[in-house]
Length: 297
Image (cartoon, rainbow, N blue to C red; front, top):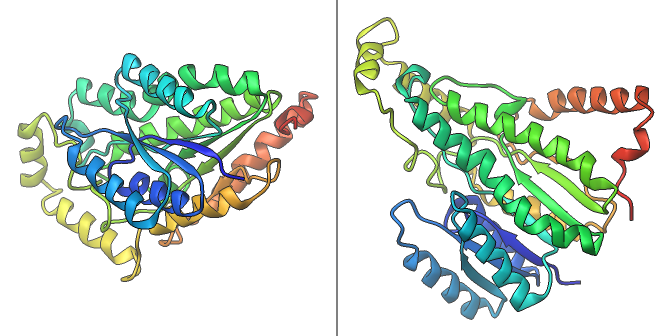
């Protein structure tokens, strides 16, 4: 059965790869288009060309998670064309790179706006329709850093992704009774094949950066990038995230895993998350709410 997908941040990276892979699998995919400079024409043209070349149903829709008006318009467009939305992939995200102290409070707020609050804007627009249908699937693209190793200079991004993970956990319990499934997909780090590092927010306090470069942390940034690259297998490609979403789509309703870890760095995030999830189950058992963790079909 073909599903109707809406994927945020699908101009490049994980989102674009996943949109194409799911479309090739036979699903109808609406790729949310956003660009930091406001020009998404190239990404739209690439998506259209891919759809024609492979004879798949891959469409584009403007989707700026920082604007409730844009989010509402995107959801209404998809519903108007297709009549329903089966799966939302919360993929859009923005990274920062630099000493945690070197970013302004406003920059932190923007990172949280994109990575956390933006998901809420979309949920407010789409969940009423899913709840009326008593079915749906929210897929959250998180980060293995939430439960795996955390490197320096990415603090604000990692903190926002950890917040998103907890956000998704809460939503999963509240939505299970409505027949809406949740899966948190936590990729490992990739330095090739995405624009994460190239598009990363740069510190708004360059004077602080200079102090770090001149102090006992001199050369720290270079060490982090070299060390991070050493973690990743030479043939690593972010398409493994798209492959995970295709695998997820093939599983029948009611059998979707709560977590997936396309993490080629083998950071141990899956093992750590398993402990957290066991604690979650045990807590709900003690509260007499164990059945509320199960999706009502």
